[in-house]
Length: 430
Image (cartoon, rainbow, N blue to C red; front, top):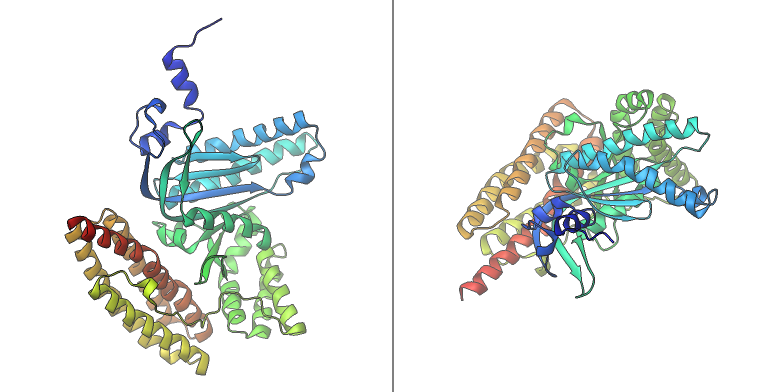
């Protein structure tokens, strides 16, 4: 019987615990891993799942099924690893992967998977097999990376509500009939949004989240004709979404029908057209993320720093005045003051926060500063758009989705994380 060397054993284990995972934990070898090892890091999480896998499985024997899954997964792995992704786990045909190097790598990896899938389907077609479809969801945020389990059985994983949201976004791809959805957190983390073909998909109320979350479709991997048609109708589509959320449904339906005239296979436009037609028949509006939702300030949002909390109160008061104005008269002239306020507010507030982070040695200061810079870029772009456009439905919608939502989520998530750190530092100093 051949006795394996220690190097052979360590090499074999690396297939189960990726070397990149060990590097993130600061370990040289799997033998150094201890239960409870972990670190907190901002990453992008990818979830993918195969569509109609049960129906495909019923056509195969268990051995054929096993071979099919491996044939599919071995094509997906290189697309992920080539963009510095780390596969955390396989769950049957589903994949969960981590991208510690940035949202752009995660999105490129997801698009790489879809492009590989297109080639795989060509092979299957030549062999007389039906094509395979998948859905992919991405979300970005802070999470704990480490080991969980018991003394006799451990597993490497990541834990965070950001992971849960990524999984739910992947599930949403079924609802909208699209291949790839990203959250607003991933959207705001991209270094160059214009590099991709992205359009707003929906504003949804996710289980466990009070504030609505915006999700976006990325359609770079669509067939060339469909990609061109969707790109050419982005403006029509997003205006239709704005009208739909303001319950101007007849106008919205007309815009979505124009999208479908240009691209009959645009499933997301079809979803909205169906919603509009249902509303006109029944009065039922499926928008779960109202654009005029008041945001309540409460003790749970306070971070425990008097200056930052006072600035946050001002933000929430201004946001609520803005949304209340939308409810009452839908007057676009009120957009200017909210933009002016936000411009002045974020410059003062971000500078204050960054000074406090630096004084207290906050370990994620670089992450926060990068988020601040990217917000400014979106704010500048929207200010330019306001000067060029006169459609108040569309502009108020974009102000809510691109600016107000981001600030509220940033306050409730990233700033609360800062608050916990400051409280812990204060406790430790004692």
